[in-house]
Image 1: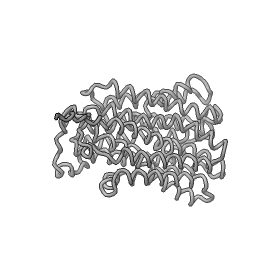
Image 2 (image 1 turned 30 degrees about the vertical axis):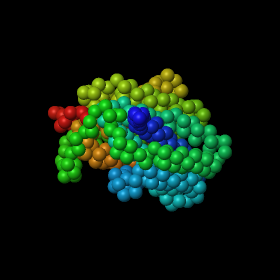
Image 3 (image 1 turned 90 degrees about the horizontal axis):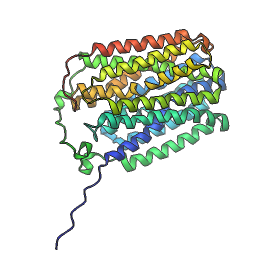
Image 4 (image 1 turned 90 degrees about the vertical axis):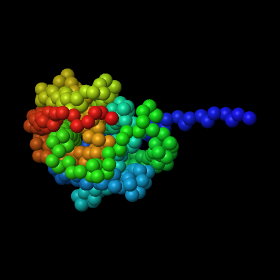
Length: 414
């Protein structure tokens, strides 16, 4: 009697992409796009100075930077599911603290919790979840997963405003935080606990052999004197510094011009542009393209967008909406391109260390952006030339760093 042939298990990597997409929606929607709205809501509720609440946003991102550098170690010790669910719980508790804070000290404690939590659902986490499953296809599939970050902005920017205005700040954080914890828990149990080895699969669905693993002694080398690492980390940090600094204050600057509802839609439109920008890069960038130049082009578009805000001069005209669209086109690429540059320039084992390090350095730097840009911020949009010029200048500096790191490739793309 002949037994029927065993059916091969479908490639599980596609489930990982879909689950990571959903994770990124919550991670960025709550932990990245939430703080600019929280800044506005806390100031409106308490009357505290903008500079004080901006400093809490800085603590949110700065403390997260310290945690994200430890993510690989936390994954090894506790496992991806436990770390991811713990991050969601901390983020939910943190945003509730933003809504309840009656004293500045309570606000800063809330910022510590939210900052520690969101990085377990942020850029380094997305890369760590996708990387084991994809190698040749990583640019496109990492881009798909990162698009969840942009969808998070599309969904949550107007949603936060509507919920806070409709049911209040505290109920809004309870509702969103509760749904987030349940969703992330389900994803962790059903998807994130699996690895290619546990399912007997290979990257890209078995399309090619497993990549050669670099010995651990090589992967442990220091990158502090590596020109490519230093320029990549600096370029990512500067680009995100300009981006986060502008985004942290753009919402509250736009409200007097467009109104709360329209501002929420405008911020959602910026993230729709981010989806378009990231998708175009992920689908159209050739495998052998110089990814540093692609990142430079993305930052260049954001420079033009920053200048469009100045030309708008505080009016709700074409220049303002062009600025929102052009600036938005580069939002997603600022987080998704640096890991792809690292993949192109470092070995697989080194990339596993480089990505968390550049994300941590980037976040440690841009954590100071909300408070720094808060010092440049005027009372209204019409007088914000210094803020927008600073964003453009810092983005140009990011382009300079990426160009300085160009040179002979250390290795072929894997």
